[in-house]
Structures are given as structure tokens and as C-alpha cells.
Amino acid sequence: MKPFALFFLFGILFTNPVLAERADSNKPVHLESDRATVKNTGRSNNENRVSVFTGNVVLTQGTMIIRSDKMEIEEDEDGFQSFVAYGNLVSYRQKSEGKDEYVEGWGERMEFDSRADKVEFFKQARLRRGADEVHGEYISYESKTEFFQVNNGTNTNAKNRVRAVIQQKKKKQE
Image (cartoon, rainbow, N blue to C red; front, top):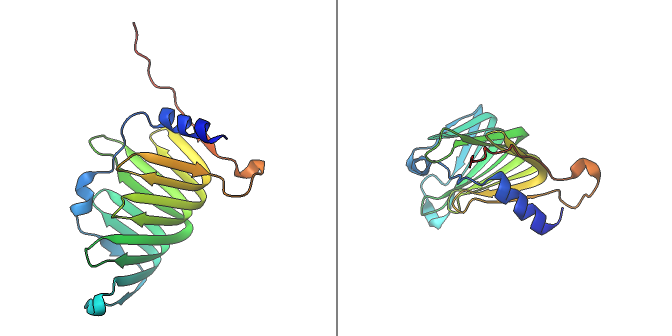
């Protein structure tokens, strides 16, 4: 699919604003797993805090829920966190701001950056909002700017093509 067509597709697919629940970022992060290790809890030497959770990991922060087999979390000195989650498949769900609608995503690996408000899915990536859905080998979603990017990686065979399902919106009657 040509780049222009791909951007046009996303303009149609996500015409209504989709912002993550803004209050979520101010809520505490709750984690559950079978095992956990934490490095640098005292924050000596200006190092970032690094935590690794393995086995049935569930992260909840407000309306955001991430489920994975393994998750690595790094927190910088300013309190911003980045997560890398691995699984078969990692799942992500978060309520859209001011709507009774959720953005959901899946992939073999997911990266989340709280500073940039960005989520990326790798391998078998899928993202859904309502009944609209996109598939590809890589999906990036920035909730602040509502920018989506989907591609099929370097593989151009038919199995790995970018795919989208776009539901028709109700048209205004004149």
C-alpha cells in the first residue's frame, strides 16, 4: 500500500478523536505476576529503576490493562516509565477519553512510553477501536496526536500485508 493511501486510510478509519483516558497517567500502577526482580530501588548513582516481572503479568493503571508473559519496566528520575512486554500474545486495553469506547491492541512484543504517550506492537500486531481494526507486523499509536502507523515489515508476501476493516459511519440525511 502506498504511503499516501495508508495515511488516507487512517484518516477514514479513525475520524473521531481517540485519546487515552487522561486521568490514567496520574493513577498508580498495579502489577501482578508469578515472579519479580527490582534493581536500584534506592535510586543511587542517578540510575533508572528497572523491574522485571515474569509469569502471568497483569499491569493496571486506571483504565489501561496490559497482560503479558514477561514485562520489563524502567522508570527514569522524573517518574516516567517505559514498559516492554513479551507474550503470546501481549494484550493492551485502554478507555478513550470522554467516550464509552476502548482501544485494544495485541502483538508478540509491546513497547509503551509514558513520556511520549506512545504504544508500539511488533509481530502479529493488531489494533482495534470499536468495530474498526488494523493488522500488520508493526503498529505504532501515539494517543496525544492520534497518529497511527502500520506496516508489514520487510516481508512483502501476501500473508504479511497490512489489512484493515473499516465500518461505514452513519451518514447525515439531508
